[in-house]
Length: 232
Length: 363
Image 1: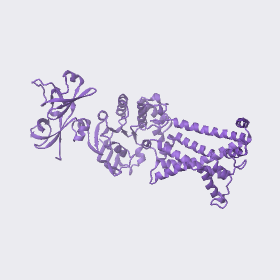
Image 2: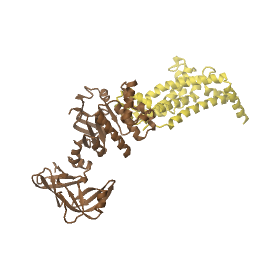
Image 3: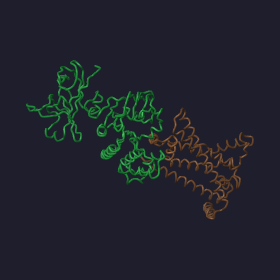
Image 4: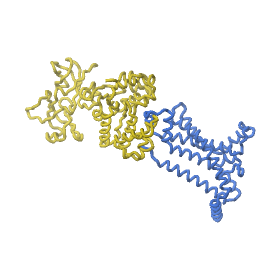
């Protein structure tokens, strides 16, 4: 029991004194996961919107692929990104393995299907007749899509939060393609794994508290969105 | 009168079935035309085809003489009309934001847009709700906002697809009254789909009765109600008694028609031996208690027995069997006055002029 209480006490001190190492890792995690989410936002939201609003042969198959992608195991992504970026791999010439760029790439691959799947559902949830109403108001195709995105803005925000939540908490891909290099590719999750294995529970708990805080904030937004209603 | 909108050989085919088949339809500037018919008659489909929200499978739509999709670009055409659906379909913003949306789409903003929106909010009695979120509105308020949004763009044609079907009667009454006022003021050409014939009668200059994607009859309300072209239209416009018979005798003004064992005198055209259908509206049947000396100017007096009495609010629907089934509407007051009950004998009289004759071209 002591070990836990002492760990929490130490963690608390690290947090309130703004320990430079903890702060640096947190900031770097936000940068990597934020950039990855931002990239996934463009690809995920645009593909999700197009699939939601169009009909084409094989659409159900595409939707099932996207939904499968939402459950893509990070270690599998890590494995394939590592193979591709390996010195004699297809993208080895980029020489970005064990750099933040590789981590962003891997995390973007994890986040994109999540953002895509939730965006797709968000756009499909809008009443079908709303599209007719928007066209009847004289909108062009582009205006219609923009209005629909605005109507689905909160579920779309949920998509972004879910994507971010997925990547900030994953560890497998980050450790495989980033290498957990101190001050260079070390993020909250990889640092927690390492400190725990070393028995440095105070830092591990401090990092975990920060992760939990992010998880809570993300879910707060998701809950708010879920509880909202659309006008009739 | 000039046609603002014309449909020629309009056909809509979806999934192999013919949903709309209208060889010709003209809508005149400033008129209100109602499309009535049962569910699945094609009312919504024809509205969507006429507004080009759905591409017709065949045929042409002419807006002010110009073919939509050819001389008239579809987007420009749509920007000159408005549509209100059964659901208000409001956007997730304020009432003001909703009503201004059509103007914004057209690039109209600022003071001019504000002035237009405020006038429309006033027209539909929702000025006080301007800053409210659309989510917090009641069904009636939301439909008012939807109508205001449609009128804000000063449409040249207004399409209404069952706009009041989801509202309770007092709310519906209040909104219909306001819409009536706005239509009288703006003289906006309006095409409304409804399955409520009373709503159609109240708002329309003309009524089109639809069945199976076709327009069975299109005419002034009085004509459609009193002189339906066929049995379907007759039953849909509330003719309760529809009888098949054969013309026995023809004189200068009237026909004698044999229905089962009875002879009915009607005013109309026909030839001896011809099969005809007689339509008798229930309001035109008068009931009395038989006392030997019937004093009525009606030429058709039938003795019969009351089968069933169904209360309909202000009226009672009385089913009489007098050699053929006949339905009469009697006010609650008259029902009590005559002490009408199920199973008693009554005399029913109908004027020869109150019976509409449909000649059956195909026997």
